[in-house]
Image (spheres, helix red, strand yellow):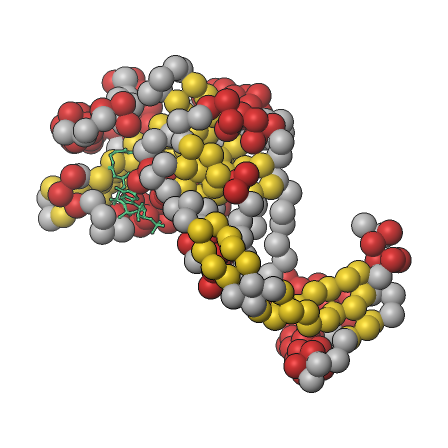
Length: 316
Ligand SMILES: CC(C)(COP(=O)(O)OP(=O)(O)OC[C@H]1O[C@@H](n2cnc3c(N)ncnc32)[C@H](O)[C@@H]1OP(=O)(O)O)[C@@H](O)C(=O)NCCC(=O)NCCS
């Protein structure tokens, strides 16, 4: 959308905003702000025939990008220079719940990746639908800003070149929603009521960051947990062994298979100077589903343990 579409977009946003149950969930643009975004930014409009049904954009205002970065850095020292704001996410009430926001978010993330931008979303903390759209695209809650009562904002950030892997988020979703199935219980300290601003500040200060939400809470994991996926491991092996990725892939699969075969046969796998893999039996226990607070009976299960060798531990 461009400058010439100003009236169409303004009228759409105003009309949709007035229909919201909580109008503060969507902050209105001032005329000059909307003009600026249409003129200089990257602003998408989605049409059903000739009817505008959804909007979303990135504001390329450099000054504003610096101000937002300052707020995020001030909430928690992350050290970004600029964070361009994604803005104007609005889907016509008759078209919600069909994946339109997710579709527009895909486009915005793609554009930000191409341009190597940090992008952020400033979202009212109880706006679950919007928070979810950001979280499911790899944004992390990095700061909170309270204007008192209902005006509590979350600053969600997707850092440039963050190497976001869609599967990590999908896996985390599965783990958080089905803890008993995966045998993983999420630390309940990682769940904070979305109205409890002091607790959010304290979590952020303790190096946690938000990655998911339900209608009432934000779920936190610890900062600095980077996950290497299999492709990255294979690329690293290929580089170290100076072989092709295909050869490294075969070796990697063969090694993992050999370790698993040994453990299935009840053997420990002791790799001198690296560590020991072992199958242990974990007793039945009671856990808590972080999404509902319900107690869950977790039956006895077999788990694989890995104990690093002393030299490996010392090298960390
Ligand atoms: C927020 C909004 C844009 C979502 O649009 P949408 O097209 O209905 O969203 P989608 O169908 O693409 O769903 C996106 C995600 O939000 C979740 N979601 C959608 N509506 C939801 C709701 N009412 N409650 C909880 N989650 C919801 C979906 O499950 C989906 O999650 P996933 O990514 O894990 O699959 C829309 O509700 C809206 O326009 N709201 C009013 C304006 C507004 O609040 N804008 C945001 C200002 S920051």
